[in-house]
Image (tube, rainbow, N blue to C red; front, side, top):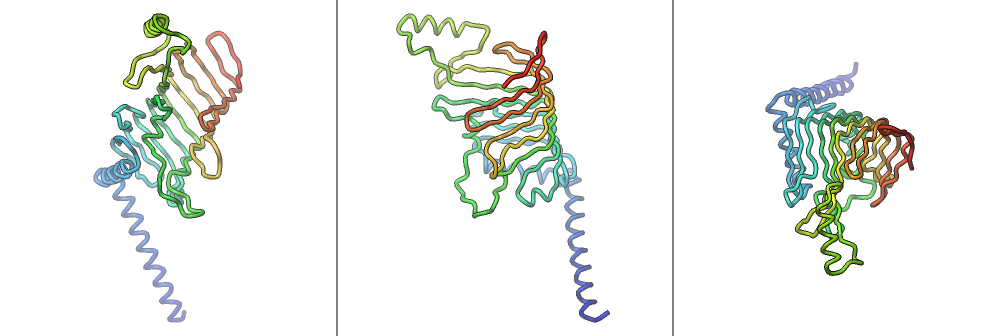
Length: 275
């Protein structure tokens, strides 16, 4: 063996050893409560810089290398209203995807998540206020972190979802007719209309949501829209009252529209499909 080859081999061994020390050190630190708390604090600080509102992350567990469990999460808007909250969330991923600025989850599990989608009187959605578009321009062919979010499998248990939209009395009514119609709508028990500081709003609620989801594309710079393939979903709707079971199909969100292809669903006394 020549002297040059021995030097090259020795340098490679030393470099490999240093890399292993760093990797093992990271794994060791992230398996301790102190290390996990430091990582949790770093993630919370990073999110607060991206979110216009408040973010709370609970205790982290797991090694963080290939997956992590967060015992609780809460995101509030700038009016201190809850947009998202959840019990334990577990995600599994390949760290190489994170290095490539991709959020590609092989598995996502959430227990008791709550989502409140709200449209303000001016037409703006609460989630767009909370996550404003970045003003930073990405270099050509450079993907920004968070521009690619995909999950291969998702399991959601006991979820709740709320949708609130602006509501107005018919503009064909005037005077006492308008006042009478408004009193009647506010007194109804079969749907939820209430006064807000922006005017009036109507709210729809879905509860007891259990979902087994396949491929879910939340964000992809190379593809338009958000897509979710549903393996099985069960949920209760209050307005109008429905109890959906065994829903199977595909949901596609393009702009302000949602397209549903439900290959199958069950109701208490019937079954069907819908598009």
